[in-house]
Amino acid sequence: MKTFNEYDFLEDLKGTIKEENPTDVWELIYEEIERECIYYADCFEIVRALNITDWKDNEFGEITSITQLAFVALYEFVSDNLEIPA
Image (cartoon, rainbow, N blue to C red):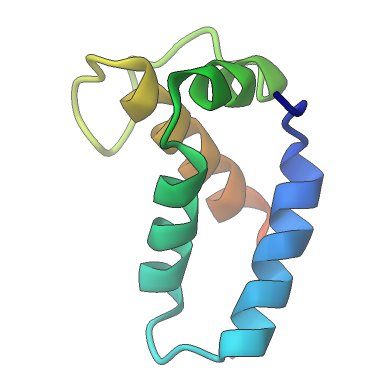
């Protein structure tokens, strides 16, 4: 199992967006985040890397699994750190 690095993920995501040039960037971002959150071990690693300790306030509602927590954490990280060119 590899160690998750949020900045490597962000750089890879930027490259994917540039390469694929999608009409709906956020749909591609959702797909990439979902792909990253397939396995529980990866989800635990994402949560650890992003230092998630509180998950009550989010726009997705109640979180009931590690998969949902990792998705929300990664989504919020990307939302806060990705600059999407117009």
